[in-house]
Each structure stands twice: as C-alpha cells, then as structure tokens.
Image 1: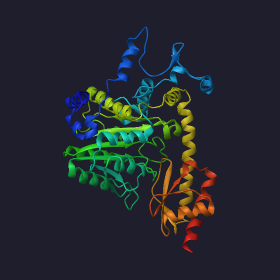
Image 2 (image 1 turned 60 degrees about the vertical axis):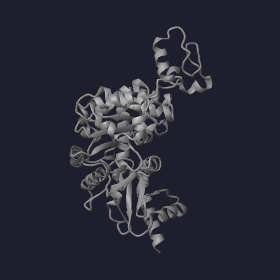
Image 3 (image 1 turned 135 degrees about the vertical axis):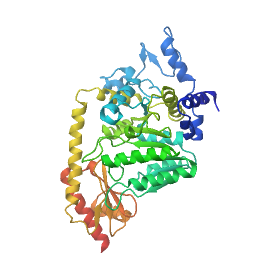
Length: 435
C-alpha cells in the first residue's frame, strides 16, 4: 500500500476505524498524489517570480485563450473559465453549495459534514461511491423500481450484487419494512451493506412522507447499532421538486451523526435542481458518524475522492462550475427557481387529475408519485416494450419501458395542455394491442 494511502487510512482510523473497514480494496488504496497538482498548488502560493509548473499556456499574467472562444463568455474573467479547476472543485463553489445544503435542509442544523467535492454531475458521484466502498460480491440495496444505470455502475463496473425489495406496499406507501429487512439480510452476509436512497425516486417519482423518512432513518440506525456496517447514499438528484405533502429535505440530515457504523454520503447537483443538465456539476459530501466534527476523516475522505477524480478524469470542467457559482450568488436565484417549480408542480398535478378520472383504469393505473420528473404506469394487459414500440410507430409518442409491466412517463417535458392527449394515445395504444 502506498504510504500516502496508509496515512489517509490512519487519519480516518483515529476518529472512526469502522469507516476504513467499509472501504473496498480500491477505497483503502486510493490517495491523492503529491505529484504535479500538489507541487503546482505549492507553487501558486509561493512562486512569486516565475511559476513553471502546471500544464497550461499563459500570456499577459493570465491564461492564454482564443478571442473567438471568449467572445460569448466576456461577462466572466478568463481566469474563471480557461484554466484547470482543482481536482476537488472550485473552492468558492464548494463553500456556496455547502451553505445552500444547510439552508435547504433544516435537519442538517448542527450536523458536521465534509466540504462538498465537485463531481462531473451526480452519476460520477455514484461511480466514486462504487469505487470507494464496493468490491465484487458486496451487496447494494435498491428498490425494485430503480434507475437502470445503477446496474452498470455497481454490478458491471464493480461486481456488486444488487438486492431489491418491493418499492411500495399494497396500500401505496413506501415499503419501509421491506427495505430494512433487505438491508439486514445483506448485512448478515458480509457485515456490510451499501443502501441507495434515491428520493425523489427515478423512475417512480416518489418522495417519502415525514413519517416514512423517520422510519427509514431510525431503522437503518438500529441495524447499524446491531453491528452491520452501512454506507447510506442519498441520491438527491431531484431534490426540491416535492409537489405534495412529503418530506421536504434529504434523508442525509436524518442519518448523519447517529451511529459509528453508519456513514452517510450525500450526492446531489445542479443538473436537475437548477435545470443545467449539460453543465455536469454535481457534489459528494460525507456526514459525521459520531455527531462530532471529524476533521481528519473529512480531509482524508476528500483526498481519497480527489485521488479517484485525478485517476479518472483529472478534474471537472471549470466554466460550468463558474456559471453555477454565479447563479448561486444571484439575487434572483430562488425567485427564478420558484417559477420553474410552479410549472413542474402544475404538470405533476395535471397528470394525477387526468389519471384519477378512472377512464383508463381497465388498461393501466399509476404507481404512487408526488415529486421529481417522472411517474410510472402499471399496465394490466399489454407488454410495456411492445406498447412502447407501438406508440412510437403509430402515434409518434415516446415513453420508456422499465420492465414488462411498467411504463415511465417524463411529465417534466410535457406542457400541461399536452398531458391529457398523451394518456389518451397511450390508452389507444393499449386497445390496439388488445385486438
């Protein structure tokens, strides 16, 4: 093992050795190299005469750039656009995102966390979690309604075993008991479980109620206290898009600081929250396990994440980080977000209004949804993939078949006055296939 990796592991072990036991082999061995980036950082601070370290071109005491490239970006300083960003992200952005997290998640008050590390959107954060904590044969717990890319990230890339549970009870509530039972079962196999808490859920569009959220958190803490090591990952991609009477914040704040055996990891980003999908700006944040500040652990975890970033993509794009930082500091940021939220909420509620009419119940009903970008139909008589192809070929309607019975609808990209016709066409498609 590299001495730098050993040093980081020892820093963490001083505050909670259980976290080291949660690591994958790669997680134990990863470190942030004292190579070009570290030497360049030292030179940036101390090289007052000449700085001949990092591999960018400069002129006139700033980064070199093409005028034609800078033309549409002249509201920004060249230094905030063209050079490499640090491997862990633009420091000012990390600071502002942390402030935003605490402002929007009241349950995080008094909670100790690392500084968010910038990722190349949330999928990259999921991949980092896989690298840090998942070895071949480890268990990753998911609801049976989960985003297909989890399989690529955790099973194909890292060899994990995905263990699912029924997302909903027959009464339409989130199946807390099934989730906790599955975590407990997986934990007994090798003493560790990674549980992904994707709320609002993709594809079902469900956010737990406050009561369900408390039951999830309390149940996971109880299992952790029994001796199972739990890495609890909150995939908060659709954070803030809560349209009904649900939990209005991340489960991260409900989990942090509650058990030495439970490490909360928060993944979020500007991608969906701020409607900047192409910017690819996400964050990974670690919570305390002890209820106390864990500065050595947080520093070591941030460096391990930085090492993975350095080893894979080197660093995340600088311009998009600058754009997001500027938006977070804009006086109209929350006003603009509220306008878009109102549009999204109207679309979601219109979907419910149309489906609650009962006129389509002989062909499909909907799974519980109250948030996010998506909802799912449960088809009664036709195969979802056959229906998907038929809708494309005959009606020019695009949908996503999740499995044989479930069809995902992204109401996020439908105007309110388009929603009823969409479901009429889906209904027609079902009838066509039933002939």
